[in-house]
Length: 341
Ligand code: 13P
Image (tube, protein in one colour):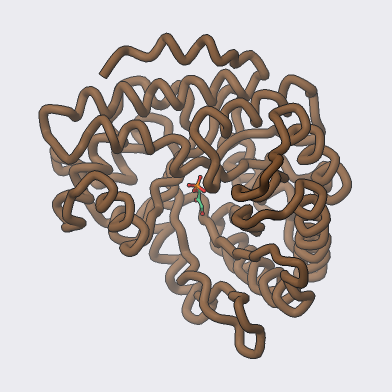
């Protein structure tokens, strides 16, 4: 198998760096813009992504950016296509290729992620547009009886089919099995479900002949439910997450890039930091955050041209904090370094 895949995967988890997930679908970016009272027009979406992607110095902490179909075709204010702009700064362009989580037939309350039909052709086009890695997200809800084995295996199968097509196209697949942490579950229950999901995923990836050294895993951390009455603290989250991933993720995988889910920005940074402080580990432990990298920038920008610099400072600061968490050297006091916006 091509070593280009291995090199790309390793570059995405280079020391001190991680990934910006800026691949919000039309529905999701509308929700984000609603929160600041901005209409989700193509122009506003371009302006927002332009602000993030032209942030001075972001490449010190950001190895890759996941784009959405609309964004990979858009241009920066100076006319440079976004993927070209990112690549010129040493940031690898990626692309979300799944078509979203849809109701799983015969399984009330559960979803399966769609998007395999025509994927071979789409990957070819995305590669020609500059994408060198991709993302496919499956989601699983936790309740006393869910997720079902049916849901776990249907999603694992689809993730592996996607991964095989990516590798054929010379694109590194990020496989994202996200066990949603909404609800009142305990951290133990989160660990059990995450374990089950990972065991099925790595079985399917093996059966479908995936070259693990040319992949990255993008999982949830093992957390108490967001609505649980007693929630585990930073050290317990780090211990439970590491315990789970050591059991299931082969050392051939170059990196685990966590999603932030519904964690606060600072929690997401503190959890990653605590895990890296216990290193070294068999894989790089990094981030592929959406909300936890963008939330302060979105708020500081507030849809106004005169706030672009403030938005960029907020994004740069979060990237820097997470860069420190890659080495286990983050401390909450460093948050004060942020230039006031
Ligand atoms: P969050 O970090 O906001 O969970 O987004 C990451 C992502 O790409 C989810 O698919």
